[in-house]
Image (cartoon, rainbow, N blue to C red; front, side, top):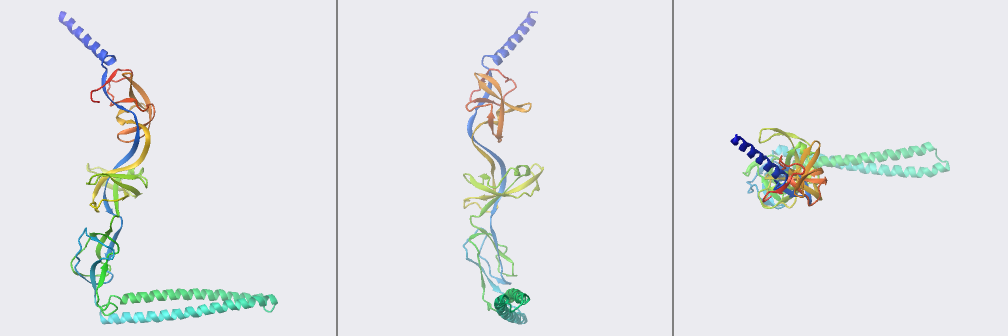
Length: 391
């Protein structure tokens, strides 16, 4: 019986001790954070790659033999720099003679069209003068109104014939240029077998050389692909549900690009065309591409490089914020445990914008108030608390 009484007494002492700790002395150890005024940014994590904003494919103007190229991917070239030389392929003499005849015929049609235009211009001028002479005669009663109307109609007809003649000259001129273009490139024509210099249209970096060996190419065959220097853009793929919050002009902060510091880009457009992509966990996701312009890219950053960072969709200055780990729900309302006078005080709060780490507080907490982080189940309204060492 004595042993049973001792156990009962010990249990009672333990209960009293727990009640004493919870309700009074010492209190529950908690971690706290202070509500502060700060800048709150809402971001979307994103990964992507760099690419050239403007690409230029230098192609062969005519068919012929292209000399060996001394360019490699990554080389810098200046505008107007000779990239290679192309020797036009000699054509069959009968083909050349036929093309020359086409040029002669086109020149004759052009001269004929010019003569018709001059004739139409003179006729239009004469019709206008005739109409001007007849207007005073109508006032004098020397002619009828019908005769004047016929003269004015002749003026309109002559003007339309002049417009038609001008169009005929333009068509004949285009046909002549086309015939001359067909004649160019022949080894027995205007070039006389002289090589054609293939020059860089802009200053840039060589992205790709399809084939650097000497070879025979057809007109229009790609020779070199150039990317304009300094014209880098970022292609970021994000979830479609995040893409609806991205707008043109949003800032992009790139921290994962391989170098030190943060690179800044600005969203230019959201493609608004989704596609399916398999995640690393094997889950199908709908992704959307976001195109951003990279300002002042470092020289070591090229095209096709992987980058990662955040798209800033919102930034609020000087707002009251607390860590999101202090928030919990009670029904439909958000609440926090504030520390006042060494005791926990439950408060209903109204939150605004938030990110993964911090939330904006519109009502319920003031700057300088301490709130409990990750409140344990033992914390209730009015319970004594003490800040854990190092918290």
